[in-house]
Length: 259
Ligand code: FPP
Image (cartoon, rainbow, N blue to C red; front, side, top):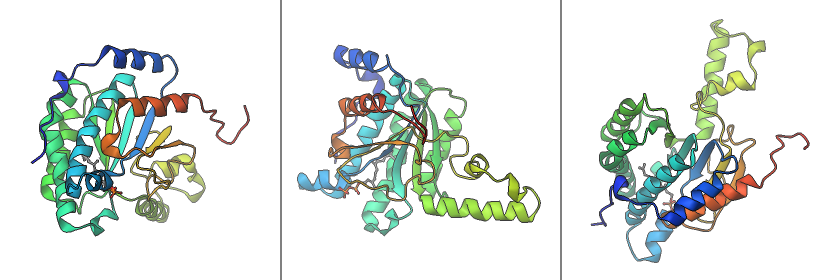
């Protein structure tokens, strides 16, 4: 139904892209970039295509973005692929999105391994279809010893639920004596979240012109720099990511202090 995707290793970097990458790498790049990939449905609607065509195109952009993030030396790329609220969508759309990890990893896992990418997932695994979870878990297992870019899929992820679960766990640990109440600080609380081994994002990107967080990493984004673009996710390309990073490099991060 949709165009075939060219394998990663067959994609040649144009010299101009290589030059742009080198230029951006002269200044510190964000270590953790998180992206709310929005606008797939509108992209499809504009072309009189079914919404799922937008998600399929969006999947190709995941691959392109991962590739560039890896080349830029970004340490972690977190992608919001499905929220705990997205189950409210039409059944066929949900089923289609749940097939994308298999398609993506079925095609690209060997290349991710070759590129030293480590796949991770954050979100509630229990409600995921078995085939989706199997594909993700296989990728996590096969890439667990890789030391390059961490590609962290937020799948069936919701930040309020994550925080509530962390609070409940803290209460349990205090009750059972594993932890004392006065030991609880921000660092300890962070270790109860799904991102326990992942630093907070330095840069958050949201595509499609929506200016909201949609229940995404509410705790972790406290001091993150935000970058919004009108570009719909399937149209997001290397230049947009480089533009976001250049913008980030011009920001003054003060973390509440003064410079
Ligand atoms: C939001 O756009 C997008 C999603 C809920 C799904 C995102 C999924 C992908 C980009 C593919 C993920 C790929 C892998 C490998 C897991 P929307 O549908 O809300 O767009 P709209 O606001 O224009 O309707």
